[in-house]
Structures are given as structure tokens and as C-alpha cells.
Length: 145
Image 1 (cartoon, helix red, strand yellow):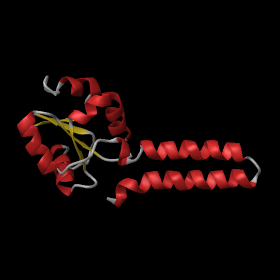
Image 2 (cartoon, helix red, strand yellow):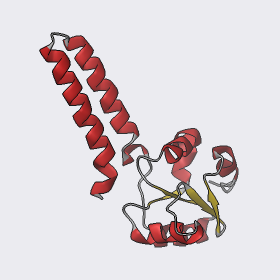
Image 3 (cartoon, one colour):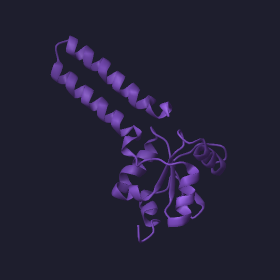
């Protein structure tokens, strides 16, 4: 769980250090701008912008019932972020599994990617797709979703 917050924490600490230096030089406005930019970067790279993650087994069970795809992701992954942002509100209709929080999810990803933890890996109807186009993922959602 702590691993998912390392990059956001580093960004906030770096932003704080830069802002402190700018304040000591007499540029509080510039310091506030830098700190805001680093905090925004930390937020974008945190698990906060992703829908609530569930375990891999629960996601697979739910997917079998409702037919919705399962997305295996991890924070700090720019491709996961791109998928999440481009899906917009539709992202909430998928089942999201954070592989850094769920060892079973990481094992599923390694099994379908020749031992690599390549994300995002989207499983649709039991078939894995690595880093698919967000538009294609949107098309895989059931009509009732």
C-alpha cells in the first residue's frame, strides 16, 4: 500500500523544497506557483484519481456476472493515467485492480505478460489486452453499463 504513495510523496517533498528556496530568496508568489504545480502532479500520480480498487478475485467474479472489463493498473504509470483520463466517466464502469495493493492481481498480470508486470492490462471476456486504446476499451463496455 505504501508503494503507491511513494511518487506523490516525493513530488510534494520536492515541491516543498523548491518553494522553501524561493521563499528564502524573496519570491513567495513564485514559491506558491511551484508548490501548487508539484501538488497537482502528486495528485495526478496518486491513486486518488482512479476508481476504488478491488481485489483481482473479486473483480473477476464481478466481471463474470456483469460482463464489464477488468483493468489491472498501478499508480505512477503514465499509460494507466492516460487510459483513466481518456475514459472519463466511463472509467467508473470498469473493475479496477491496483497490482501494487493486490498480489493476486500482480500474479494475473505476470501470467499474461510473460512474467512482466506490464500495465494497464485490460481483461475482456477472459482475454487480456495490454495497453489497449481507450476508445476500444469504451466499446467493450456492455450496453446496459
